[in-house]
Length: 385
Image (tube, rainbow, N blue to C red; front, side, top):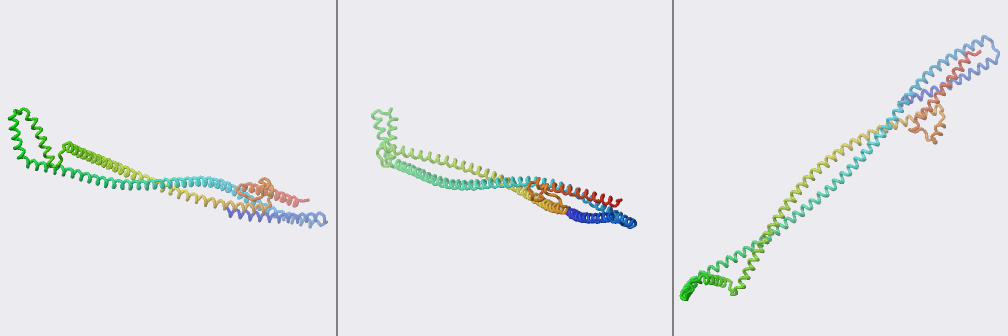
């Protein structure tokens, strides 16, 4: 298209030169005819000059016909260029519209990337927080287990001590009873004979019970050295209460340990669920980021292609504007009408290309009309009186 433009410009320059030459020839022949009319020449010379004039007129008509043919071709090419220019304008608008749409899509993709990065950062922070919480729970678990083991060991030591004390007391009681068994037996026999003598056989069960109690008290007295029965009973009750309290404490510690184990197992299950959910979200984010990255690359490639096409079309439009400006200058177009309509004289712009092409076409028609007038005038002169 640029080659055609250059050719059109060259042909217009050539035709303009030829038209100037024809004008000069017409003026020359008009001056000759005027001189012939004013002068008194012979008929023979007039006929020869008339023949020469007619011959020159035919030559000029042939040149004019060839010029018309060339000019018609130039008009056809000009129309073709105008159609191509219209197509380029439409394509440029489409490219600009598509470029704006792709730019909006690119901005949306960048926004999605920023959102995904923010979500990834939040997930990473939540993961770090969960890890810290898990470490704290592990440390608490270790401390609780250590404390629980220490308390259980202490309770086992106390229970073992009490058990050894009871065993020692029972052994001592058995030893004392074995030593005093002979004396007690003889004493019981004497008392039994005395009771029989007194006729108290019917109440032997009651005295037997009292004797057994006295015997038991005597054994405890031998082991502990305590003679006050109330103190012995109080001490025994205190020991039993202490053992019962220790047993309850051990049971509570066991229950608390079981509760802690259940909580630890539950936390482990929750941590496993959280880890699986985190891996799933990580895979989803990675897939989404990969898709967004691929889409962004494709969009950037399309935008780059459209920018190249827009640049190419812009170069062509700039060359067309330069060519149209050169043609307007060569054929002496009147630009004042367009400049008055636009209110400025900034030259040819993208939006005024068609207006300047219309101005070129009107000026071309004027030149054709002038050429036709000159041709008819030459013919009328050649066919003069």
